[in-house]
Length: 458
Picture 1 (cartoon, rainbow, N blue to C red):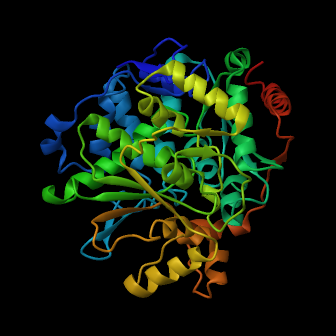
Picture 2: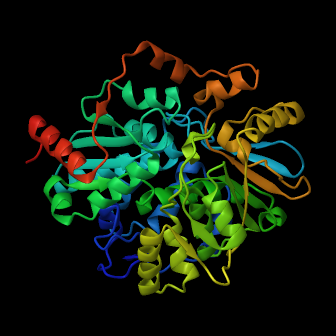
């Protein structure tokens, strides 16, 4: 299996190299050069446990990995989830179902990819004998999940940028209260987009990447996308056969990675009715699907902070397909977008997507509405998925985080505040973070100084 860049100026690579690089050298994002047809496998995959299905799926892509090592990486990734089914499905009504993706170590859907990615990196270090420097940006959940997946792993140093004061207090504690000596949470003054832009710019510095063994945990890393594709497939296989092609997947998303992971299955012979993109007031994706214009505005802090994003990194992967796999056009559009802050697509084809957005006032109302109607509590991101949801349409809502991560939202709604033991223990730990200017030179200098001090590299 070969992987190519959306921008077309980098050589194709195997799975292990795509994972190690994260971002392609030309600044593009990796995609499979061709896609396997899953149809012949579906019948025998129907009864598989989650880890079994994940292994069978990844075998099709990680063709340059030892299967026994891959299997070990996959099985260990999901052994720490709190429920045996890993991704249970809850029926709210005859038409509405919820896919619960918050039973991992950090109570968010990011655990599905980052527990596995941490193991893949560990295997890479054992295979190549070289330490790794992991760099990422987070709007909340990615940082905690990445740290959980990499904490204490030998030969790995983890640097995570997050916007100071713009993640929930418990999300911040999940990053700053690990006590791990190989973890460096960096609080930057600015937005997630500032952090993400800085990280992506650093990844284009090829000499620095080589010097420190840099790799990525953000959803620019294709392994994360593929790992998230698995829970869509797992849920799809658990629907009645006659319901599979009629069900809409409703996905809270800001960076477009989560919903793109599901859409990618349609390139592998999986028929899905539609993907509904749910956003908060930072609704750049909703406006794109509604008007065909991809236009930036200022990030507005919200009750659903993990979606407080304007630059949706993974849209470039969809763009590659929208533009007929024309890498030069992808490069042209992305260059224009960076320069102008907007791009208008003539005759924009939404390729099986619809969308909705929820205001700050609507989020608590939606939480209360779902609780009153179904006796089911959702977090503020998942609440956005229920905005204008058709009660007659078969829908699978992705529940992306545990409600206990956002207590202030329920206080505001005058509801009982949910709790989780995994979060309560963090309140007793002294947090530790680092303050660094959000520019590439400052972050590079901090990384080099830290690695030098630790005598791991340089």
